[in-house]
Amino acid sequence: MDAVEVRNAETFFASAPPLRDRDAIVAKVEEFVQRRLPTASGNRASRMVCITSGGTTVPLERKCVRFIDNFSSGHRGAASTECFMKAGYSVIFINRRGTAQPFCRFLPEDPLLTCFEPAGDNLIQLIPSHAVAVQKAVTEYHSALNSGHLLNLPYTTLFEYLEILKIVSLSLRQLQRNCMFYLAAAVSDFYVPWQSMVEHKIQSGVGPMAMELAQVPKMLMLLRHLWAPEAFCVSFKLETDVKILIKKAQAAREKYGMHAVVANELETRKQKVIVVTNEGQVLVEKDASQADVEIPLVDFLIAQQTSYIEAGGANVLVV
Ligand code: PMT
Image 1: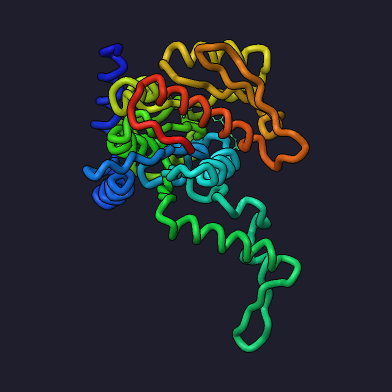
Image 2: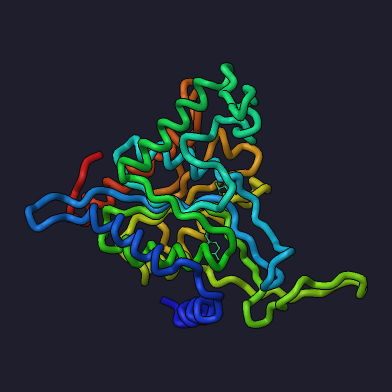
């Protein structure tokens, strides 16, 4: 592992603002993971996936009024969570606050105001045309949470995202090859370091503003080689120019040692993706009977992980 990458990451974490509720998050993750470890009585470890979803924000002021955002609706992460759970995986869902949530993806944008109406005397009622969708979403979401197989960890900023990803990785490594990282979040490449960030709202009226952004250290390398070296790692590559997409995905796979890189183009990302592995590339498309491309994508990646586990010869679990 490149010592410079490690140093850059250490500097990033040392200078990041303290993560709110850090101890509670660590305890929650550890408790969630412990329940899936193999027991002395011989129970096998169950498979777990950490799914990251949504885009990170980069604050420009400590008392943040303005920020830079990264595009992602969270649809990919939410749909994939449903697919992995259906396949028997436990899911740690690291998601940007306010983006799409599993089992609720098909509700209207503002479900509270769209699905309910006043019914007089301090009562509200579910509008009948939305009743089936709301009932399905609420039932499925709560049964996933209550099953103990879904842990929802929200973030907003880049700092929160990377701190939480590190906490989860260091805990999940105990599951060795039975854990997967599915990194669909769109993560900022540039940021304002906390120590050089102004405290208060940046004032206007002083003419054009120049701001220098520092490069965010790529955490994929650390995750893969230091934090959870045996985990099956999948990253994503989004481009708008298809001509460079595959090259960039191949380069990311080689540079960061990913087991698979999912290449997607902005316009067609909901219909098809290309998965780049060390064996080449595979086009994964949804067919007419499938609601989401995540259905064949998750199937494909689970099969890849099964081969990876079998090649390692430890703790094989068929799902
Ligand atoms: O949410 P949707 O609207 O459904 O859209 C899904 C998606 C298009 C956002 C998703 O499919 C996708 O492609 N996500 C990755 C977008 C992207 O190209 O991100 P990136 O170039 O910032 O990062 C590439 C990979 O490196 C990602 O897996 C990211 O998690 C990781 N990364 C990035 C920066 C950084 N400093 N550290 C990282 O680990």
